[in-house]
Each structure stands twice: as structure tokens, then as C-alpha cells.
Image (cartoon, rainbow, N blue to C red; front, top):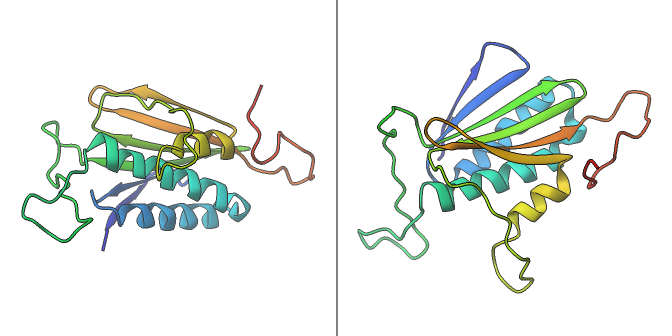
Length: 173
């Protein structure tokens, strides 16, 4: 089971360190649900959870380099590094920041290589993650860190009056 450590100094900025296992994707979704529930933004859960899942999956696959288990484990098992980086950082962290009316979901990892959206191949089993991130968030991007990078996606909470801010599945102009 993937464990996460949640940190909260500012109640509108929450962070969870994820274990470098595929179960981390579920932990990230649970973390998103808990934060959005606390902020009374449950209507954003489906979109934010989907994007968080994609960003964490990308970090697991590309940033820390999932590779077959060298010990000859069962098919589909992977060998992830479980030690902190030389700088002492654990491999993956997810953060949510709520500054009304926006919510930002950010996933940091130890790789310096930025994400690149591939041409959509509709028969491939993977390769659509960043297209989903683009479709379900208002905007997204990435920034290099001193060691690694952070990939972020921004969401608009629906205003209480019910007026449109751009709507689901639309990007800002």
C-alpha cells in the first residue's frame, strides 16, 4: 500500500509525499478528495483527480524510470528507487493550492526533463496523458527546480452565482 505524508502550514496549501509505487496514483486521488472536501470544492474532484493521476503516472514512468524488476518478479512488477535523491528529496510530491477562484495541482519529481505532449495515437495504450491534462484543466505548464521539475495544472472553481468562467474542458485563450 502506498503511503503519503501530508504537510499543512497554510490550510489552502497542502502537500503529500508519495511512495514511488504505482499505488501512489490512488494515494494522490485520495489526497485530492480530502483537500477538495475540506475546501468545499467537491465539484472539481473528477477533473482534478484525473489530472493528478496523469501527472503522478508520468512522474512514475518517466521521471524516476520505471523498469522491470531485476529480481525477476511477476510480470508487470517494476523496480522503483525508494531512497531519497542525493539532495534528500523523496521522488514525488503532489501539492494543491487554493487561491479563489483557482485551484492548482502541482506534481514535482527529480527529473530535469520537461513533459512533451506526443502526437495522439488512438491505438496506443499510453501517450494521451498530457492531452487529458490539457483538456480537463484551465491551463498547465512546468517549471524547472534546482533539482527536478514541477508540472502544474490550474482549475477554475465554479463561482457561487453560477456564471461561467470558461467551463469544464475549455482552456483559457
